[in-house]
Image (tube, rainbow, N blue to C red; front, side, top):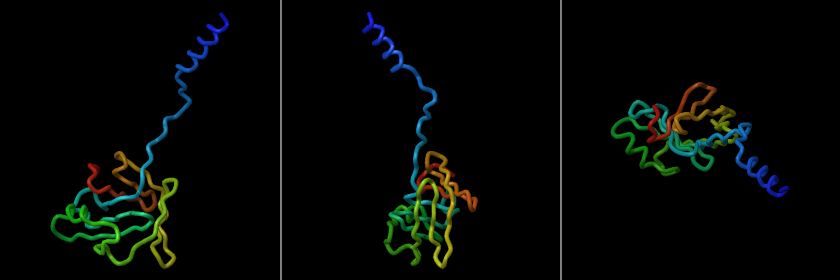
Length: 132
C-alpha cells in the first residue's frame, strides 16, 4: 500500500504544471544581412555582420535585392572600411574608429527579422524577411 501511495504521489508531481517556470525566450543573432529600411530600393544601405566584422554595402540603382543577395562578406563590393563588432547579451558594440563606438541594446521583433536599436533609436531589417 505504501508503494502505491508513493507511486501515486510521484505521478501527480511529475504531471503537475509548474507555472513559476518561464519558457525561454527565443534568442536571435545580429549575424547576417540587414537593411536600413524594410524595403528596397527605399533603403540604399545594407550591413553584413559576420564573424565580428560589419561590412557596409550601397546600392544606388537596379535590383538592389538581387545585388544584396549576391554579396558575400569581404567580397570587395563593400566600402573599404570595415568595423569590428561584438554582440553579447543583446548589446551590440560597433567600433566606428577614431575613438567612436556604437553601443546599443538590441530588441528583436518580427521573429528576429527586425533589430531595434535603443540608442540611437532606429531599426534594421533582415534581408528577405517579411518585416517592414
